Length: 482
Ligand SMILES: NC(=O)c1ccc[n+]([C@@H]2O[C@H](COP(=O)([O-])OP(=O)(O)OC[C@H]3O[C@@H](n4cnc5c(N)ncnc54)[C@H](O)[C@@H]3O)[C@@H](O)[C@H]2O)c1
Image 1 (cartoon, rainbow, N blue to C red):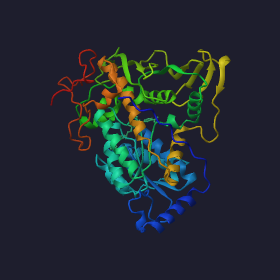
Image 2: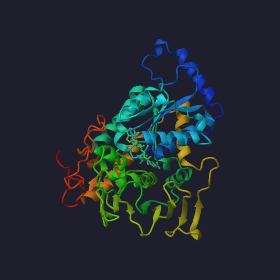
Image 3: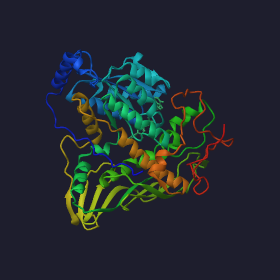
Image 4: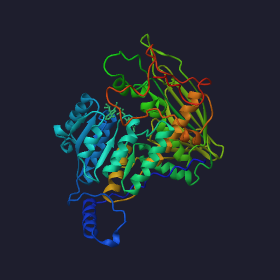
């Protein structure tokens, strides 16, 4: 199967001064026509029953990004009333720290209205938090990716709009499930944003249009780099045997493919996604190198599933290439950038991050200041793609515009997983193979309790199965039997 082309980012709408009025007008119109039989079968979007344009938000997964996403959501209050009314996490300390930080936030603290009985803890907390919302409100999913489909399925059932963080999936079965759920969400008129915020970077949007218009000619190759020391929980030493092993794995989610897709998926997906967007298609296959040079931390064995070095060669249907290099090793050359080589010139997609800041186009293949033909301008009020993605989502909600980024988010997640699996197996992996692969990394993610055995079991030595390229070839690792 030919992978589908990435759809463009939703076009940001011009700032509207009467968003509240138009939402009210819509609610009034919907109310007036609701009983008319001629409308039977016509899909009506979810709106609040009362003449109230306030959007309530529930935060599910109250860690670093969740707290940031809640701030981003609440800053849209400038364009229409919004408040945070419920929070859910599996750890009380995470929830309480996030709540306190949000409450203290000078800009948005006054929009945080989470009563103690609207703070929920546990694996079912997501349901309780979403039960506090009305159809048309927004649920934020910022847990590790293993729970995306579980939470999304419930949000659809409740008629809620959603913002969910990347990556969306790490394996074939959950990718297929998420694509089906995305169709259900669209059929219900729900709006769903995905945290691939590069798509909402005004400089990358501008660059993508210029590339499509032929400013660098035909794309022959692209290069992406994210190389720095270890970050997040990519490298872990053994669980100390106290408490729940599952809860310990969740706290160290970058270490485990079931929870995060590992450091490759979690850290590199933005560059993979935005370069494929520049190309206008997804790659058909990948082959890759990768390995783990060092497996000790302060003298202790590391037991996580990650390599510390990845180099993936993606191939597009037209034969052009995209090389993605990722490294987590202290003391090595740090590079965090992306490049697009065309027959007429080169573009720097992103100079030192995931989102442009700036993007530029150059004559020839040497992207220096002297060769620059265009550099993306800073757009006042729209410099921050994390804010833009929320303004775009809320605009779609308030004005009932079609908006569902899930299919594209799953495709970006699949392409990332395809590169990771190519490195972990030492084989060529096609898009189709990744999509249709049967290995599900966290089966039963919807039935976990703190006492459950973790989806990945350790051996008697406390070590987990790791990728073995050339030995374990049909899957990324050989799970240990229970
Ligand atoms: N777009 C970006 O630039 C960006 C940046 C950082 C993180 N992220 C993404 O956001 C997600 C979270 O990352 P983070 O850095 O905030 O991690 P984190 O560990 O700080 O936060 C995750 C939170 O989810 C909670 N949680 C875990 N399982 C849960 C469950 N089943 N129900 C409810 N809560 C649960 C954890 O206890 C934790 O508080 C990841 O998918 C990550 O890739 C995106």
